[in-house]
Length: 236
Length: 236
Image 1 (cartoon, rainbow over the protein chains, first blue to last red):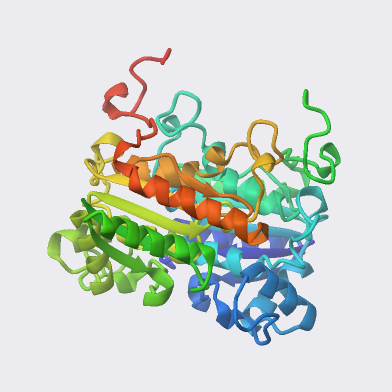
Image 2 (cartoon, rainbow over the protein chains, first blue to last red):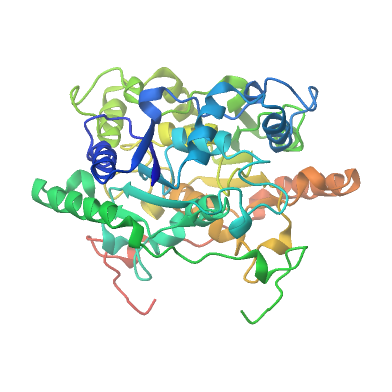
């Protein structure tokens, strides 16, 4: 497999960064090809702006998605976006490793999505969900958070973690066509014992080694909707 | 009222930016005091990093939240964070105006949350939900998106928009103690007629003028959980 690891943590000595390193080592030991974007180490610039476009469809008024399409067609997207796109379309599996900030990705990773998931290649028109531009590829999320597992779930104060992750797992990764594997969640990481952290790392490495056996989560299919995206079968 | 408008759109001529301007004008006409953070215009730096701290609790290993607490206590957070915190704790109502990017805030606004919602003031310890650091203040979200309303809701392909907004409305704003008003949603904005846009702007201005009558959404209360955040009443 060709595997692209996208990582975002501000502390190089963090457990989360060790999860990234474990992913690279585990996959390489298995003979996979691995590329890494360590967004903090790269100083990735996360703000979607008019500066992302070397040539403009409309120089006077920027609709970001329309300029993405123009940039993708004409090859005039900024160099950092093109470099990330090359890795994304090269890979069979993309692995995201990050700490949950405010029940979402850190801004540096959010901006990577905003800028790299370009209309015209990753999505756009009817290119989404199972017809998304990244269809045929898989995605694995490995995240760490401060919260404890009992704070989540139907009775937990925050509700199910899956609900908090919906904009990323469904609205971003599945939307882009990726087959999204069940996320790996490192609960309460800053506050647990070293022993618990060792167990967590072992569980992560086990997930990585067996990733080819994982069954993707289920998300909407365009086959269940008409051309205007009205549901074909209300009872579904 | 004292009102703080936080805005994030890369195109100054956009409808979304016009919503921000309408908010400022409407509130000022009503005699309210208004401060604005236009994040793109300010060139706001959204990446949470070790550079945010002028003095470190632990110079060798950065747990971002712990350094936030130290920085808040010692007054050594970076100047741009302190300036935003001053506006946040000054206001009675904070209004967020932004385009929905990937079912979430643009990275520049996500990073504003990551950096400005500091542990030790906005949250931390048992300081969350109705005991959050911003308790007593209200929040209004006005957002635009490309999607149409029928693509959302229980039968819509993306599910209810409220679910997509949960990490922001509940996991961020309500978590920080804000009373969150029902969001104002500008559907399909890039693709509608001028006439539809005028109607949408009129509806937004109506919401702004009557914001004091709005009934906040309901979110978890710490009163329903024990000290370990286990629910007190499983039947609730």
